[in-house]
Image 1 (cartoon, helix red, strand yellow):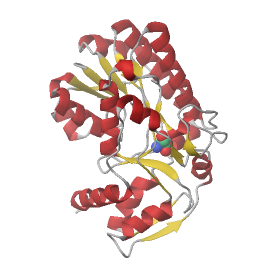
Image 2 (cartoon, rainbow, N blue to C red):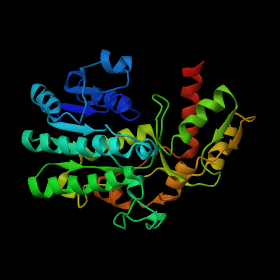
Image 3 (cartoon, rainbow, N blue to C red):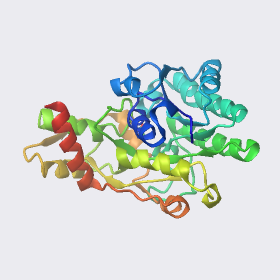
Length: 316
Ligand code: SER
């Protein structure tokens, strides 16, 4: 990886992956591409920034050629609940966007990182210790795009030799940029509300357990997988990875260790509850550990402490 393009750079993952990549590979070698969201100051000030609509393949090809890109981290996508509200637009952005990235990569010899998700599983999948290789019949458009995306990435690798790699991210928790339109967003929002109002109304049931991960682990996973020795990889698209697994009530209990008068209330959103009920409670990530040494660093207690420390400073 010498010249890197990050699509969806202004989103929850991109806004933290771009600075990490710039630190590692040099600021001028990492081009951040955003679309609708106003870019964070750091993205624009610390290195090249461009606007890009991934549904425009010509615009994408021009950036890849002009900047002599050799690796694309393709993060631009709508999240699960947003996709459910507008499936036609979601297909265009999530699926056509990925196809464009793969085509441009095939022609220009780029490697591709594609984030899949716990959303790539469905109600027929074993929800506990979800195997790496198992039934994937998701019931959301987001999930359909993720499974199709995993398959398409594998196809481009076996058919055309494009170096495609990906992980199935669990819900991601971060203090830099809020997620939007996701089913696991509660696990980020809860911290803002706990600090500012000492109470939060959760849209998922108190005992809905889902896989989660703190953003520093998620960023490191993407970089480590793309740097991994290809000869060690039996899988490519995509590896189960996880760091912790909890329900809203357990997260609230952990937050109360730091903010004792925090209270959690519930008002279930049927759409997001149904999505969460179709996803794994915790995945088996042994293949990632074996094939490229995946190892999370933050558990629930460490993540909660760090989130509260950073948000206290940010919000004060
Ligand atoms: N965090 C995502 C969502 O909730 C899942 O990949 O949509």
